[in-house]
Length: 291
Image 1: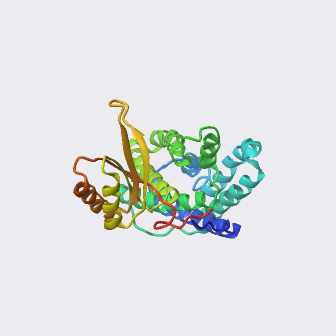
Image 2 (image 1 turned 90 degrees about the vertical axis):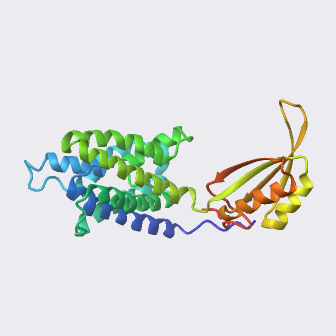
Image 3 (image 1 turned 30 degrees about the vertical axis):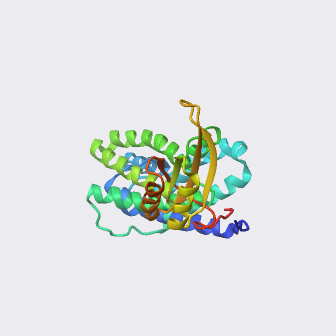
């Protein structure tokens, strides 16, 4: 198994720059024109822009609100996350505000809420995923979620963001109506799904646990059929008290049918459990790297 050197920091900053640009496109060109609040400080900025439109022509710009709201959050998390983390997040936060300010509104012509939810969620989800892959956040609720995840590591940053963003969506429903809020929930789901997809890996596989009394025959058949490695472990049935042979094997999705046929041919009475593997690193699958 080969491990590679940590990637250069410049790649992280490139991911953050491109990711924040994609996020800005989804906000400026899809969400803001139809007043869809999908959470985050940028969602709060859309609400503030609407509420201040009667006092300031066009309302307070999104980029300005995004920076102002982030200042107290940065101060609170300085001691917890450290200067190094904040340096990256500061870059991503400023980059997002920069793109919100400099990028023109692209006339996509998406005035349908369903299309806006799907395409806005997809573009924004890719952007957020790239920023998180760069080991940073864009501040706001992303940073709030990262702080919470520091103490609750069993939850992913994306999942925590869903809860925090939900509160902002509720406020958006009060300002813009419940219909937009319901479509915003769809957009948040799409964004979270795609972000998780990027963060947790796309190299899906299948894991098979096989309990059999014909260990050698089953293993030989699997090796011949799939050419995948197999690990044998001793197990014990807690109900019967009998010793069992447990085989563990990871195969690609297209190979799982061949594996089941191989097991059935060697031992029809075998007990087989198949589950999903979100990401597999190592020989025969994705190269194992240190990020």
